[in-house]
Length: 258
Image (cartoon, rainbow, N blue to C red):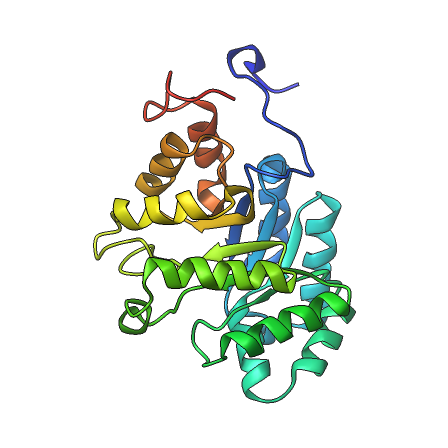
């Protein structure tokens, strides 16, 4: 039983179909990662090993962390940039084999940096699904100038293509900063017209909004509800985000219903 549990309504337990929280692991050591899970695992659904961090760590350490996360019912997966590097080097089959040997059951398929045409990206999603992986895809470009070329209708089309190809969920690109990418302006404010365009046309239970900033998290929770799917959450902000979801912080107190 949690302290003061009579002051907050329960949220749906895992495995969740919505209200997903994806956390970014940028290279935590096993002890720190375990400490994090001991206190926060109930509020985390996915944990992403950020961009290309995995090749810098020993295989046994990576496998230890993968197994540990899964023991807390948290699904770990490698960041999409690492997949893009594998594709760039014509090592996709080897990538799948290594991911499986390390214990990963979920992969991210993206084309945020490396140029991969939509048709090819969809083929790669299908390929990963056929290999037995759950796929989380990502829509958007990491370079702000390239990302600005995507109109809201382009994002809708790309999300739908990924879902048809077999992606279970789709991340809306915002990078680690949540600024000047996707639906965010240079200061991290949400472009409401673009946001509304996407929410009117896409299934919200399939979308994970990358929202590293508190103001963004509050916005999504007030607009969509406490069961909105949010990603790129810093490890130290897991509990803070959960309080926002549950109305245990002034920003959402009395404004959310679970």
